[in-house]
Image: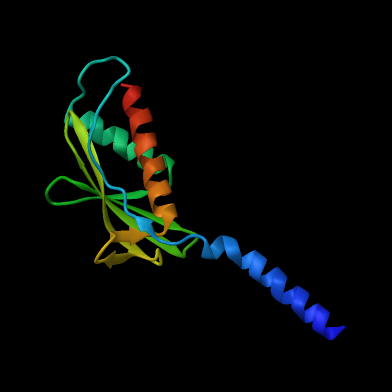
Length: 139
């Protein structure tokens, strides 16, 4: 009886752990030189692009810091457990989102695959990119 209970407990534990273990690191996706499209069809000024980035980042829970070279450093902290940092370069005609740093995201710089990370990193950065594009379409 105890043997069956132990077997069932082990099986249940393995089944519950499978989704967490399935989240193996994936290649980092950087978004370089994304062309800006506005709703009005007119070219925005760089400051308008910056304002759209600030609005989108704030809406998605990111904090921003301005760097000396004018770039933005976006940081997202999730459940006080995971932190990702993205470098954002922007101009009047395009913007870029590139990996800068992370904490507790399974980051590795592998010889064959290159830089890999937990798949949620790519999802969170994609959501930021989509939010920025949405803000830009309001212009």
